[in-house]
Amino acid sequence: MGKAGNEKTGMAPDQPDEPTRPTEPTTPTGPVPPIKADDLSIVPANHASADDLKAVFGTRDCGRCNCQRFKTRGWFWEQATDEQRRAQLIDQANCGDPAATSTTGLVAFLKDPQATPVGWVAVEPRTEYPRLLRLPTVWKGRPDEDKHDDSVWAVTCFVVRKGYRKRGITYALAEAAVGYARASGARALEAYAMLTQPGREITWGELHVGARQVYAEAGLAEVSRPSVRRAVMRIDFDSSRIYGPDQ
Image 1 (spheres, rainbow, N blue to C red):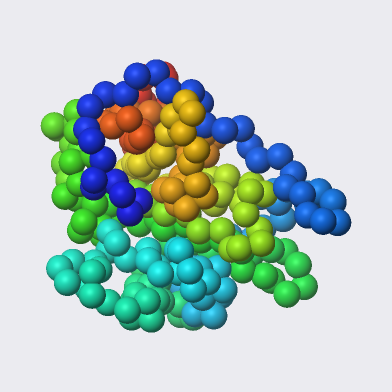
Image 2 (image 1 turned 60 degrees about the vertical axis):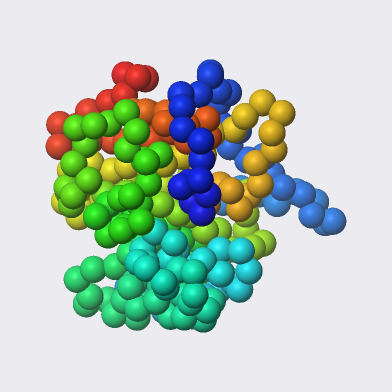
């Protein structure tokens, strides 16, 4: 979500649906099968180790942000080193402490003998993202939305480990995030999805925030479209109804 705060506002023209679920990627030895939800164990990040998170994030791209853009205040985002951001993520997630009462996301592991860590989703109360609360893109067209309502949770980022991308892991993580937020007492869960545009290619890195289709398949519905590249998606647990223009 690194560019969300710089987008031009304004309602978008009709946009195409997000790309369909990924087809089998190919390697020199042939197609690689998709990874389904049943192939994964997805747990709160405090049940994962620091090394697990480091393996998922790597050291480039998402391994430089380490999910700190919306979590940090003041100077830290601009001036902190990659290692400082990584340490901050591990501390926030309470890695290696199953008894911790809070964490900042979920980690996906393959159900293989090595329990290979392959994915991450950031999900927690919306109020835990100080910078998110100041982004006009998130709030445009929703004047009655209470920014300080900690019963509304948010998904802000997906990371899939290099070598396992485009195999469907993000879909499983989104579904798990919905269940986790609901079980944790959230009244609603929001996300700020990326939209495709005709003739414009979207890189994998831009989709850290999640594509619209990913959230739609997890049960969220579009409630606003504040810019040409964003859709606010939401599911309300309190009334057990999904609301938005698609209802």
